Length: 405
Ligand SMILES: [Cu+2]
Image (cartoon, rainbow, N blue to C red; front, side):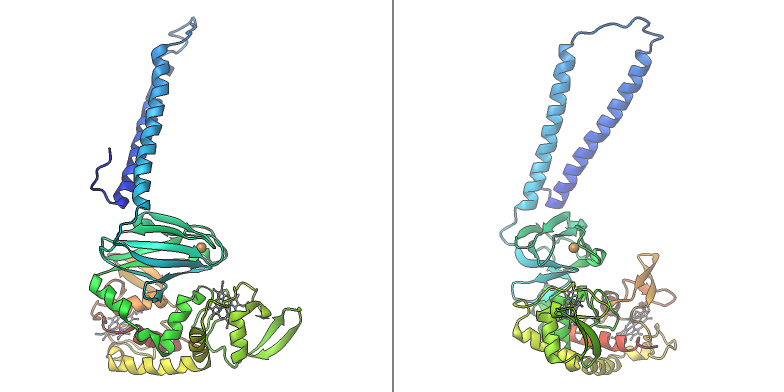
């Protein structure tokens, strides 16, 4: 029987260990019996073969035993499955949309995020769908693996009972950047979560545009730092001259202006920039007019504004007293070229090389003790009070320190 007190994670593990245990017993039992038979019925010991025409007990055992085993496996599988499918009444709902190649999590108040933030000890129900092909949400720590299917809703739930950061993968091969479809579940203290959920500071200006690019999954294919990905970088597009292929197959040179950008988002196949293939889906009826305007504003002059704000903020917060911006060493590593380099860090006592990307940099600021850059002392204080917009501005400034050098 299965102990009632087990949570779904433990029930899945319980079913696994039962199956594993039975497999070990059978492996050992069959191997030993085979060896015994080889010895016992060797022809030197039994020169004259003997016909056996049936043995009632042997037949009863080999029918009953496998039947019982299969029924036990079914029982444990079924109980574990029921636990995975029965969502507690007090669960919080999060809508999950999978797209090539990112995850979007949408909360009941409309807030969106590309990382799944959840409060500790509050069951979470994920209602999932996909905008394009089949993906599969895989959270090993919570034993969840559920396909997301276009035009259909699937669900899963889990109870985040331990603070921390847990991997999320796509477990269904979905194209070129399938392997990039990774994010995390961040289990936070309930107060921090509420503060994060209510924090609307990112809903203005450049921070809002970047949050939208994340929320709509644009950053699955585009970067905002100038480097091309599946699609061209969104940075400094405005005013750029580029060669495009029109629907009729003809090519021409255009200058990226507002109508072009709107069209690129609503009808991406109308003009394909040189060197790229038509992999972007239409965001018509997906991006509303407000969000579209925020994005267009960012395209037109978002970048510079937030770089300046980021520079001032980092002076005001004292970052610049420990970090140089010109390559020289102060108390901490220089910020020159920081975006996109490889950071060698000590984490949980082991040395690791990690890409210095958005997620790494955010963590370096809010939780610097987690991965400490090799060769430096862990003296940087955690900066917990910064808003998302302020963090975005700092990141924009750091990006600007890593260009053309
Ligand atoms: Cu996928």
